[in-house]
Image (tube, rainbow, N blue to C red):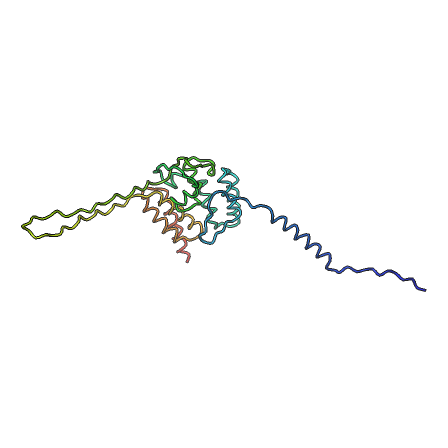
Length: 254
């Protein structure tokens, strides 16, 4: 009589793979639950489809806290991966550039209100919330997120004066012996153009970003407008000459 051996239950060949996949899924879920770095109180731009590269977001948060050294490392790391990242280059230029040359020497005082940050002020007066750090350096503020309502800062440019109220002049009554004639109102004198350093700084920042991004013709046009807005700014003239040289080089290679 032959002895009966118990049958060995064979495991499917894919059971080990399923276990590995399940463990990998658990690890992935745990890693995705880690909180992302908070970008700080600076509004993120929406134009051009940019939604915030992680390294740039970290650099913005670090600059808001005054950690310039680590912020520079993050920006350089982004540029090593993508040399055409205009926002990273713009932030790096704010770390290295001269605030008076970039924004102009003329300024006026302004008292911060509730809810205002250097980012919202930069958006309103410079047209770009990413200019918050150069505005902080313009005011010798080491930690941009430390500003509070009631704090007095300097805004580059001239304070816009309220438009004077115009009074309509009535024509003088003619003598009774003469027929009435309508007297035309005096012609208003055309305003003379004046320098606008704040507009020039905004146009210069946009022009440099376009030049760094490879849009040479647009950079030349923006820098020409910046030079016209602030004719005495030597830094803008130098940027325009450099952009024109790049434009000539690019066109000669076509």
